[in-house]
Every structure is written in structure tokens, then in C-alpha cells.
Image 1 (cartoon, helix red, strand yellow):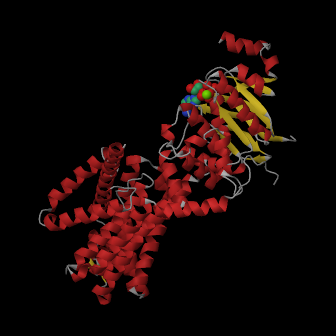
Image 2 (cartoon, rainbow over the protein chains, first blue to last red; image 1 turned 90 degrees about the horizontal axis):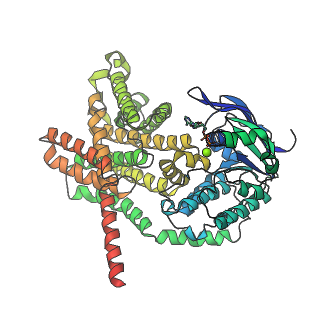
Image 3 (cartoon, rainbow over the protein chains, first blue to last red; image 1 turned 90 degrees about the vertical axis):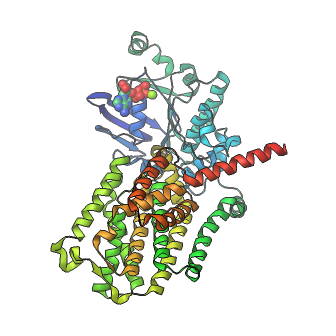
Length: 234
Length: 339
Ligand SMILES: Nc1ncnc2c1ncn2[C@@H]1O[C@H](COP(=O)(O)OP(=O)(O)O)[C@@H](O)[C@H]1O
Ligand SMILES: [Mg+2]
């Protein structure tokens, strides 16, 4: 029990009888970076949605810093310290980058945080006055990240931030994420790119059909029979 | 609370803020809002010196207020309230019954009318769970139900039922005119204040994407409810002003769906989301209606119906949007010519 910032226990989520999550467990410590991997459709994004309150679980329990948040609405979870980015970015597209951040700062942030540093940390300073819909997809993903940071999260889920990026962009993102974790944020990184996770994470959780099948170092994961079967045999 | 701080503490923020506020004040947007408030209030304050039909002027002010109410609920949150007139009718009745039963001054009775409508809106917040046309239709049904209730003969001892209200004893043409100007100013001020408040920022965000708004910490249900209650209060006050102006009316006069339709058309025509739009829409179209439409109202109903469809589908930003686009284009050209 001791020390976990986030604990997900036995979470089940069905869509029309199809169990996208089937009793999944996940624990993350403060300042830790955990990779969340698994084949397409295994329930990674659904887990992020359930933890962030977009969907309500059918069963199971979610605790943040020892507090049960299973039935909290999204905005309250945000105030308690959960945030996330989206696989398909979701900016407030008619608003400028600055306004996007202002909103999160006003409603989800704490008084002594500087808005400007959020943009610096996510490399968006030059886009400050641009309307969010004019940003590139990669920039919009970073805006999701900046928006999340402006709410001063304890636990942050990053859903496929690296997809479609060049190697040099990926290493920038890795640095960015490491810096965030260094401030004590518990990070869960959903990603397909194993090389990216290798350099970043202390351990990975492998999901298959809505349930974790492996937990440990990535090096061991790629040797695990079930993991190999899921990735190659599927 | 050993919560990790992701972001550094503020350095020199207050000064930055001051400069920011000052810059904001000089922006075109602020000047426009200030004029949007002052011009109508001054114009209607002096209008009776030049034009003697005070009832028409009061009606126009009531419609500007209703159009601003639609601006709040539709323009800022995207909910199209066809049954908006329900709050107007309840405000008119709340005001009249406060005068008749509580024997309070009409000005206070109007405030009571506004409060009653605001409370009704709170009770009706579950309607906000509906989206799009379901919401529009549900509010319409609610307004009809309220009408059926208030006009019910069995409630004769409370509401006078279908026989209508008579508060002729408190009639005061000067008094109701002043109150109408106050209503006018208040409705415009409400829009200006909301637009630049945290509430306005939150409502814009919710219109953009409710999920992202909630992930920014915005309580989507609460912020929408605020806009809904404010819009209802404006309609309630407007109904109260109408009651005091007319003093004798049937329930059908204050629960007439065409009042909703007019308010929506005026707001859409002028441009929702702006301060000026609903004012321009109400003055132009209500003026036109009073000039020609009173003799042939059936054509206006038809024309207004067509306007709703066209503006909702093709010109969601209204005349103000067209004007803004023209200004922008003109500016681009001057910039290009200068270059
Ligand atoms: N809103 C939804 N309605 C119905 N099915 C869904 C919904 N969201 C996810 N699913 C299904 O749940 C499964 C897991 O999806 P997802 O969590 O997006 O997978 P991943 O992110 O791991 O690729 C998929 O089969 C997907 O079709
Ligand atoms: Mg996914």
C-alpha cells in the first residue's frame, strides 16, 4: 500500500457487453515513469479514460494518493491531481494557446504557479498567441501536455505522444517527460515505440484484452513468452 | 500538503498583470463593449423626447434584454431555448402576484419576478442534460406546461387562471419606462461582464470541447447552470417590466411562443456571442416588425422562421460576424497596400 500515488484495482469496463477492460491493475509511485504497452485495442486508452473520469468503471477501484476517486467527476479528479493527454489531441481549438493554458491555470491550477513556464517546458512559447487549431498535430499534443501541466498534476497519463515523430523530436519529448517526472509527478506513458520506452521507463506494464499480463523491466518483457505471443502471434 | 510543484513560482507576475490590464482596456474589443452599453442606454433615455410611443420603445428594450438573454444561453453555451418565453411569463406572473398579494412596490415586485424565474431555472437544470434539438423541444414543452398550469381555471384563486392579471392600480408610465432602461442596461452589462469573467472563459471552453474543459478543472455542469440561471433571471425581469407596463394582460400574452422566436431571431440576426449583435438585431427587426408587421404578422412569422434556419445553418455569427469579416478583409487590404 505504502507509497503508491495511483492504484487501479480490478477495473472492468464494458462497451455493449464487450469487456475493453477486464479486471486491470496498475500502481504507480511518485516520480516514477511507467510504460503502458500492448497491441492495438487492448484497452490502453480506455484505461486512461477510466482513470481520468471520462468513463465510469463497471467494477473496480481507483485510488489517488490513498483517496478513493472511483466515483469522482473529471473536473474534481483534476483538482485532486490527475491529468492526461489524448492520443488524438483535444485542444480548445478556437482559443489561443495562451487562453488554453489560462483556462487550466485558472480552474485547475494552484495560485503560485507560473503560466509562462508551462509553455517553455513544452516548447510552445513561440505559439503563445496562435489559435490552437492552427498548430501542427505534434504541437497540439504538446498543448494537451501543457494544459495538463498547468493543473499541477500528481499523476499524468500521456497517450501516444511519440506517434509520428522523428527521432530527434522523440528525444526532445523524452527529455521533457523526464523533467516532468523529476518534479515528482507519477507518469504513465502509453507508447508503441519500445526504444523510446527503454530509455525512459523504470518498468512497463503489458496489457492484453483488458488485463495486465506482464509487469517489470522492458528488457525482461521482450523475453516473456506471453508477451512475445501477444505481440507476434496476434 | 507536500504536493510537488511542477512549475516554478511566479516572478514579477503582479507588474506583468498591471501592464496586461492596461493593454486590455485600450483594446478595440473593450471600446466596442463600452459603446454597446452606453449608446443604447443613452439613446433610449432620451428617445421619448423625440418619439411618443413609449410602449413601443419599452417593448424594444424588453426584446433587446431577451435577445441578450438568448445571447447568454445560446451564444455562450450553445443551448437553443425555444421555450425561453416560459421564464418571461413566470416573471410577469411573479411580479404581478407580488404586487397583488404581497403589496410590494412594482420595482421590488419585478426583482421578485426575476428571482422566481431564476429559481425555476435551477429546478429545471436537468434539461441541460439534453442536447441540441432535444433541449430546444423540451424547453418548449416546459413553457407550454407552465402556461397550461398558470392559465388553469382551477387555479383561479391564485393566478386568476385564464381571466388574466390586472395590476392597473400601480400603473405608472414614467416608472415603467425608467425600469425598462435599467433592464436594458443590466442585460447588456451582464453579457459584457460574463464575457470577460472566468465564467465567460469557461463557457467558451465548454463550447469548444466539454471534455478538454473538464480536464482543465472546469465544472461543466455548474458553469452551464450559471449561464442558464442568469438568462432565466433576465427573462423574468423582462416579464416583470412588461407586466408593469401593460398592467392588464391574459396569460397567453406572456407565454406566447413567438416571444421566444423573436428573441432568438433578433439575437441570431445580429450575431450571438457579441455585445452589439443582439441589440442591432432587436432594434432593426423589431423596428421593421412594428413598422409593417403589425398589420400583416403572418408574413413576419414566416420570414423569422426562415431567418432562424438560415442563420443557424449558414451564418452562425450573424450580421456582426459579417461585419467583422468585412473589417478584417478591409484591414488586410490596407496592410497589403501599405506593404
Ligand atoms: N467508446 C467506445 N465504445 C465502444 N467500444 C470502445 C469504446 N472505446 C473503446 N472501445 C473498444 O475497446 C477496445 C479497447 O480500445 P482502446 O482502449 O482504444 O485500445 P488501445 O488504446 O489499447 O488501442 C477496442 O476494441 C475498442 O474498439
Ligand atoms: Mg489508444
